[in-house]
Image 1 (cartoon, rainbow, N blue to C red):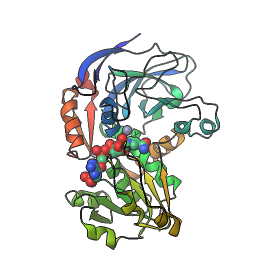
Image 2 (image 1 turned 180 degrees about the horizontal axis):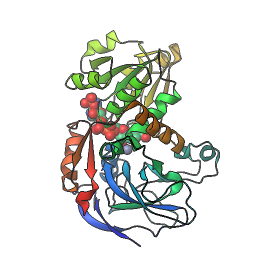
Image 3 (image 1 turned 60 degrees about the vertical axis):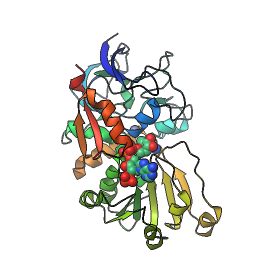
Image 4 (image 1 turned 30 degrees about the vertical axis):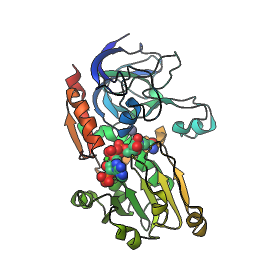
Length: 347
Ligand code: NAP
Ligand code: ZN
């Protein structure tokens, strides 16, 4: 079994530290990927800090992974040694249920296998992308188009598809009014994607601090949610609102911004329950929904769409020994707009 360097959390409160971990031997349908870059998603922080419940330590997180194929199993047909590839939030599923057969592996009825903190078939806990290499079943390996800069593309594997998938599912495009709550890792990519799909895009951020960036990335309008006048002005104005906020919100205030038949999609995953008033939903047949990152076909479609439209995340490249500082800066919303770890610094 190959041993690789990684960065792991050892408890919910201590800083991540350098460790070595073992990867499984390459099985018949596996691909060995030498990781080049890994993004830092807010979900990594929720996970290692135990926000979503207790986990087993040590835990290597990271589910925005790109790199190069270095070995393939005897039955692998989709990928070749030397290919530029990516791995996202899931690296396994039953493959036979109704959802898997539709290419919605993330909604596998038997439960998908998370790229980290998942219970693998051999009883081990999966370990993610803050590491030098990973072994993944070829079905869960995405092709990274040649035109996309490998050092910036990693965040598309989670943040990108988490926004692209609901934009497509709820038919965002010309004539639709889309609002994105939160101008962070997810939110800023959502602005680029929704704009490229032809929607009218509004950012709802706490302040106007990032307004200039938002407009440059493709937003048509930008409002501060700390200003109560925003909610009066925008009432009833959106067909689709994508909430990317990592903390609880006054959801009823955002339901009031939906048009008739509009949908508020919850993407951010704080632990606080979602509470809303019933009558504003009833009166205008509005919906509240959730959405998880995306199945393999929509993830590949998103990567190809980004290549076609020249879309890449705004990133800050860091070395592995900066991960703990980066976490503090994500928690303080001091990131423009996604940290990406240079895996070469794990050597
Ligand atoms: P992020 O980069 O930290 O962005 C979150 C944004 O939320 C911040 O930039 C900030 O935007 C806003 N925000 C933060 N704290 C807030 C508060 N207390 N009140 C109001 N707004 C606040 O995080 P991310 O990586 O984009 O992830 C966002 C959330 O999505 C996390 O909960 C993550 O776990 C979840 N997630 C879900 C999925 C899924 O499959 N559904 C996938 C990936 C991530 P402004 O400064 O503009 O206000
Ligand atoms: Zn993520």
